[in-house]
Image (cartoon, protein in one colour):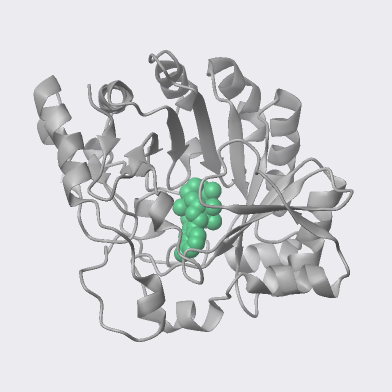
Length: 333
Ligand code: SAM
Ligand code: SF4
C-alpha cells in the first residue's frame, strides 16, 4: 500500500479519532453553554467501525492514533477501543486527549489496554476560574486525573492550556513554574476560531509570543529543546534546571501547516483532511469495502489544502474557501 502523501509532499502518519461530541464540560472557547445539539447516538461509528477505518489507515502507514472527542471518557468501555487499536499492526503510539474529569478511575485500565500517554486539558489552577472557563466540573477531579495518569505510567503527560486574553494570561507564570517543578509538559495553545469567529474569539485571542516575553521578564533562561514524544506542531522549550518542558502551539501567529501529518475522523464518521475547512469525506459509505476505504484515504490526500487561513480571518481579509461549521468538540481538536 502506498504512503499517504498529499499534493504538497506531506506524508500522513497520524490519525485523530473522535469517539463522541458529547462532553461533561462546556469550555467557553469550545462550545456554547446552552443549546448545543449533540449527534444522535445511532449516528456515531461503533468501535468495530472505527477499528475498520483505523485498520485501513494502518495499512497506509498511519502509526499514531489519538483518541479525542467531545470528552472521550464519557463514552463507555473506551479501553475496548484502545485494546483493538493497539492490536493493529505497525502502531507505535496511542494517546488520549481528555479533560481529566473521569480519568482517575480509568487510568490503570486504559494503560493495561495499551494506551501509552495522555494530554490533559488544564487552563487554570484556580478553582473559581475553572468554573468560569469550563462552566461545569471541578478542578480537583482534573488534578486527581493528572496524578492517576502519572501513577499508571501514562507518560509523558502533556497539559493543554488554551491561553485567553483577559482570562488566564496572568497564570502563564504559574504554568511555567509547573513545567520546572514537575515532570509535566505544558503546552500553551492559541485560541482558534473553529466553527465560530465571533467577538469572543477576537477579544480573547492571545498570540503566544506573550509566553516567551513573560519567561524573559521573569528572568528564566529558556532553551529550545526536542519536545517529548509526539510533539507535532509544538515549539518546545525547557527552563534551565526544570524537569518538565513547555511548548507553544501557535497556529495563528505562526502557522504550522507545512509539516502537517494528520487526518481526523469525526465521531459521526467523516474523514477531515484539515481541522479548519469545511471539506470532509463520509466513511460510512466505504465501510465493508477495502477498496472503497482505500479510495477514500487517497481522496483525502487529493483534497487536503495547503493551509488554514485563521490569520487572514483575524486580519479581516477575504478567505479563499469555506471554513467548517463544526465546533472543536465536533471534530476533536
Ligand atoms: N474534551 C477533551 C479535552 O478537552 O481535552 C478532548 C477534546 S478537546 C476538543 C481537544 C483540545 O482542543 C483540548 O485541549 C481543548 O483545550 C482544545 N480546544 C477546544 N476548543 C479550542 C479552541 N477554540 N481553540 C484552541 N483549542 C481548543
Ligand atoms: Fe469538552 Fe474538551 Fe470542549 Fe472543554 S475542550 S468543552 S472538555 S470537548
